[in-house]
Structure formats: structure tokens, C-alpha cells
Image 1 (cartoon, rainbow, N blue to C red):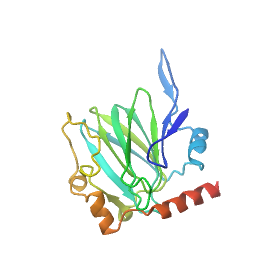
Image 2: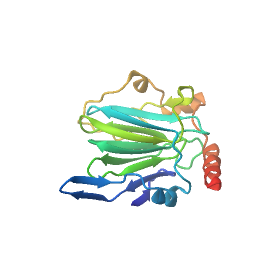
Image 3: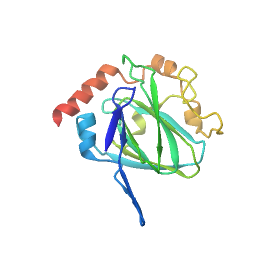
Image 4: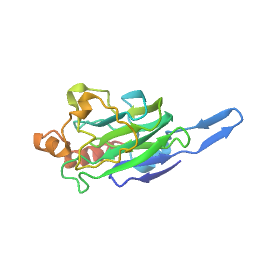
Length: 201
């Protein structure tokens, strides 16, 4: 498995090798050795999630209070989607920057987003599935979102697809509004937490 750092620090793309034959295909979308090489600590698993989305469905941009936050390792076992990470950590040198990776059921690339980063995606096909490995269980009391339509972020949602969104995502604050309201993660807190995870390994 190969990996590369994305332009948002503490986010990575992983590319596994697939093994097709006359029976079908085998692939390992998560491999611990490659993950340790990239991130420097094991993947903690507090919950696994699975979503299925119609073409044009946008989910996000979501994040949790950090620490402990909720790191995510995500891949697409069916269909295809555009996965987006946004640096929403106040004080980060790349605050407001985003990066995007196409995840699909042909190449089985995966994306890892450390605690404190914002995450969202759009389904590019009907019946697109997303699998998430999350470092912490879902806790609605510490979950937040910013609108995926924030004009200042100008995220690369395809213009030729009708957008389907929840009311909660559509009416979420912009990044600037969330910063003013004081519930974005702090970069220094996130970095200290990453260091704690690595030192415990």
C-alpha cells in the first residue's frame, strides 16, 4: 500500500493494491503497517459507520470537539464519491485550506483525517456507499458542522449534479461564523493531542 500526504496537514490518502481474478476481486483498504508509517500511531477504533447515498448527496462538513475529536479513515466500497477535508483548526498555518480525493470501488483508495479536521463528501453515483472507521463513538453533544456551501471555502462540488442535503447541513454556519461563535478546534490543542497519541505508541 502506498500513501501520500494531502495539502491539508494531518490528512493522508492511501492507495492499496487490488487483486482481481476470475472469481472477482480482493483488496485490503486498511493496512496497519502503512498507516503507522504515515501517521505515527495506531488507528483507534471507537465506532464503524456505513452510509449509502443517492447521486448528488452532500454530507458534511462535519467535525467534533478536540480533544478527543473524531479521526476518520474512510473508503468507498460501492460507487464513487468526492471526499473533502478542510482545515478548520484555528491557528493552523493552513486554516481554511481544503483538499479532495475521489474514492471509488475500482481503486479503493482511502482517506485519513486526523482529529479536528472537517470532513464532507458528495456521492457521484446512485447507491454510493461510504465506510468510516472512527476513533471515537458518535457523541451528538460534541458534534458540529459548517455549511458545505460556504462561498469563502468554494469547495469543488460538481456543478452538473443536483445537490441533495440535510436541512442541518444546509443551515450550518460558515467557517467564519463558526470561528466567531468559538466552537472550532484550536490547532495547538490538536497538535498536542496528536503528539500524545504518538508518544503512547
